Image (tube, rainbow, N blue to C red; front, top):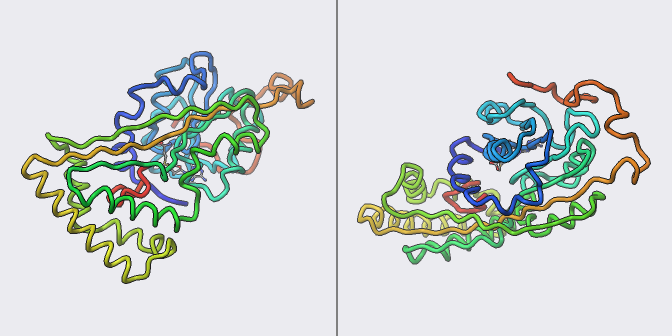
Length: 305
Ligand SMILES: C[S@@+](CC[C@H](N)C(=O)[O-])C[C@H]1O[C@@H](n2cnc3c(N)ncnc32)[C@H](O)[C@@H]1O
C-alpha cells in the first residue's frame, strides 16, 4: 500500500474545497449516513461534515492517518473489503484513493455494495497537471519527471478523467462527472511548507525516493542521476529566488467529481435496506479488520495529489 504523511496530505489539500460547487452531485444536504473511504487525515471528511447533517464515518487502512481524521465514527479497514453490511450508507465517497489502488474497480464494487443510493469519487488526472514557475527550468523539469513517473507507476494516477467509465462498469447508473481545478500557489510571504519544499528540491531527495518508479518509466540509472542533478540546480535557483522574495509558482491539479446511482432493490430484485437485519448499519458482516469506531511526492511534483 502506498503510504502518505499527514503533513503531505494537510499541505496539498489546503484551500482545496474553498469552492464547493463541484460537490453538488453528492447532494450532501440530503444525506443521512456517509462513508469517506481512504480518508487519510480527514480533509474531505471535514467538508462532508460541514456540508451535511449526516453521520459521517471515516475509513482508512493506515491507523496513524485515521487517528487524525475528525469524524462521527472511524474504522480501520480495506477499501476492497469494507467492514460494513450491504446498504449501510446512502453515500460512499473517496478522494484521491482510486489512483492509489491496484484494483480500483474492486473498491468501487464494494462502495456499491455498502451504499443504498449514491457512490462517488473525487480523483485527479495527474497527466493534466500544469505547473508555472518564475524559475524557468522548473515547469519543463516538473513535466519531464511527472511524465516519466506516470509511465512507471503501478497504479493509474491519471484515472480521474476516465472515472465515469469505471463507475458505469461496476453497474452504477445516472453517472455525472464534473471537472474541478485545484489551484495551488506559492508566493511571498512564504510559509514553512513552501520553504521546506524548496529545500527538498535543492537536495533532490524525492527524485532519489522515486528512482525505482522513474527507472520503470524508462530512465536508466544514469538518466535518474542526470535528472536529479538538473532538479537540484533548479531547487537551488528556487531557494535563491525565495531569499530574494521573487519566487512564484502556480500548479493546477484537475480533479474529477464523479457520482453514480446504485440500482434500487426494486430494480435489482434484491433485499432492501429496511428488510435487511435491523442491527447497527455500520456493523461488519464479514471478516474485514475490526472497526475502530469512535474511539503525493510533492518535491518531484509527481503526482501532485
Ligand atoms: C492520497 S491519500 C488521500 C487521503 C484523503 N482522502 C485526502 O484526499 O486527503 C490516499 C489514502 O488512501 C489510503 N489507502 C490506500 N490504500 C487503501 C486501501 N486499500 N484501503 C483503505 N485505505 C487505503 C491511504 O492510507 C491514504 O490515506
